[in-house]
Image (cartoon, rainbow, N blue to C red; front, top):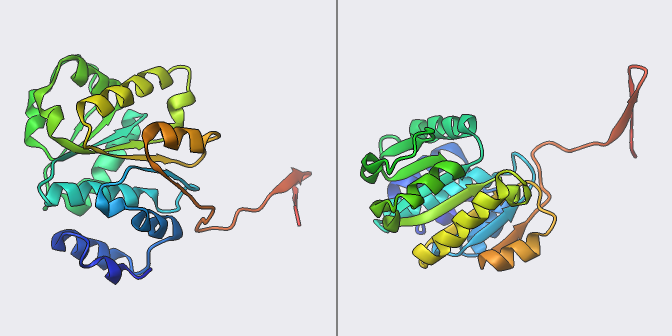
Length: 221
């Protein structure tokens, strides 16, 4: 799919930035658009690393913000990843929207975040905000959960599961975008999230399997 096919579906400012960087959408991105990404449908995207999952999240989040539908929260498992995503989005969209990062260990409501459009945070931070009944949460339209397969993690999984459950109750009209490179029970998870499942095996670099022994690699044919 040529990116020009999105011209009438995206806010003009967002389309201009996207079109200046890419010409063709990747397979998972095409599937997501056709599945209702830009019509506020929940999606669970399970595709390999570097297959274009972040752009799927960008289109949903920025469309909602620029169309005046509400804020967007981007949840990541690690503070370092939150900082990386914040830097990337700030560079691309800092002139269009207000972007913030909140990953501190301080247990507070962080009321200043009400002034921002796109928020990057860990699941633990969002859990803190919800427990403080942060009022601006109800203005959130899009929630992106990166590495959503961590629902199975014995450490972070329970917190993430509770967060999703609470958000589904607090924000019945939210659009939820789950991203992962690998999920064992993707169909079951998609059903629980009430999301359309996007699966694709395309990757930018072909993956070869082989055995390394005595400084030599024998690849599987």
